[in-house]
Image (cartoon, rainbow, N blue to C red):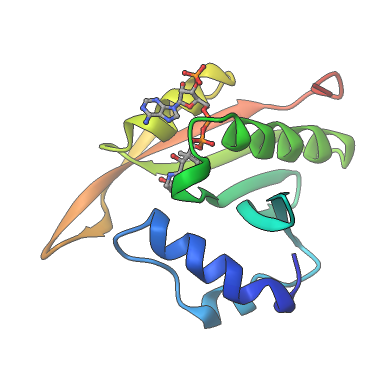
Length: 146
Ligand SMILES: CC(C)(COP(=O)(O)OP(=O)(O)OC[C@H]1O[C@@H](n2cnc3c(N)ncnc32)[C@H](O)[C@@H]1OP(=O)(O)O)[C@@H](O)C(=O)NCCC(=O)NCCS
């Protein structure tokens, strides 16, 4: 992804989250130690992933598929692409946080081999309260080349 894609990214982000990231947060993601990938359908952005490389770990910060493209395998493709590239780059572990209530994402992550390794109480804003995050992890190997 590049800054020219921001309008499309922000449109998908607003479909994906009750508390979407701001444009400035996305602008800060165009940096060498981040991996910011998108997937297009008929030329239009349909989803994206953003991950930060921290030494030999890659942290998935955002994975989002546009509302009308969901349940057609794009989220899985974005995640697999991230895993494959990270393993090739020599990363040894994928880490992420996910809302405890986000059953769609948790189901995707579990089906790709991620396991819950912890939780962060009150990590996310949730209306006027807070919601816990589950921390999930996957060990990466060079054979992760699906
Ligand atoms: C989570 C998200 C990225 C999944 O993307 P997607 O393209 O719809 O997912 P896929 O079509 O690749 O589905 C892969 C698996 O995810 C799970 N899944 C996806 N949507 C689901 C739903 N509504 N309910 C339950 N499981 C679901 C299933 O296990 C599915 O496998 P299956 O098709 O064999 O049943 C998408 O729902 C999204 O963008 N949500 C809003 C943003 C968000 O919550 N991101 C995650 C932040 S941690």
